Image (cartoon, rainbow, N blue to C red):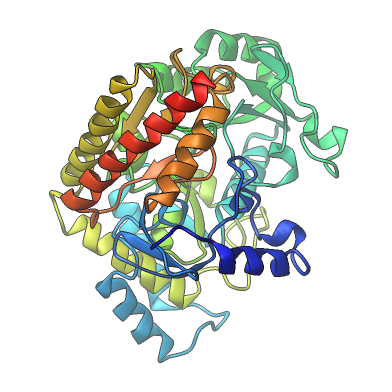
Length: 436
């Protein structure tokens, strides 16, 4: 079938008449890569299907939660069963407790957990709790790490290794942004200097242990332990934002993979099995400050809704009940990245490859990428050429150089081989574009 997105283009034009930019989350607009976003009609296993009749091997996986693949039979059956009893009650259910017990069992740093509806809610609530617990106001985030779209974290990095925040979006006031300090990821000395100046005012450090929103970047050996040590030294809480990495890079998340114990952890994605969900949890003495157990208020009508709880619980049960699944996911990810590397080498293209568990990323850059500043040097023009060439061959990647990609348990050897073969053609197009 000739690659044509005529129906999607018409749908996108209509959507723009009723939805800002035609999408309900900005990266879906394809502005980073150009062209028309395919409008998706359905998904199954490792594949998604658009309204123009194209099939794609999917490495977005709804931005991470589909670790078991789309429409996994056990998850859809759990949803079908839950639907028979209603969709939401605004009252306690047994499912909420069962999922909480599973999270606490699989992630030992979490002694109590509160369910919310999104990763943004989780990080926002965790920061409020940290400020209340420490009786301090400032927080530290890292340039390029994304923790949702609430005001205090929509802050730019500035030009130095450590700077006071400035608003990164209209509508965010300077007063709110001014309570956010920004450090460079993978720079422990810069973080120490920031604490030396503001330590008594800093309530918490929030970090993606494996960032996925400046492209995928890996922590240097020992770096996360240094962050843990510095935050503890100055009495600040350490918050791991594992919305993306939780139950994806390892069964116990990045904290299990790297052997770090944060004070609070934010979760999402996989614990909802593809439905809207978020959670935050951690040490009992901190979490007991959350209402109604304590004075820190946070609430949500749909928090812990039975559909998300059923899908998330089933997903975690499958993951926990399949001992070899993470080894298999890592092997598939390595096979794919190695195959793509071989094809890039044939065209003398120097790329950077990062992977952890079932999460990976590729930078079109000749330089090592280890923080936001080095990530921004990546060749976005070449990535856009590569992306469009892959899309036309039925490979669906994140439509941005600055997003991670995700492997699922149902991606087959044939899927990986087809992706590697498509990359050869895509790299040929990139090489050709560089000679023009």
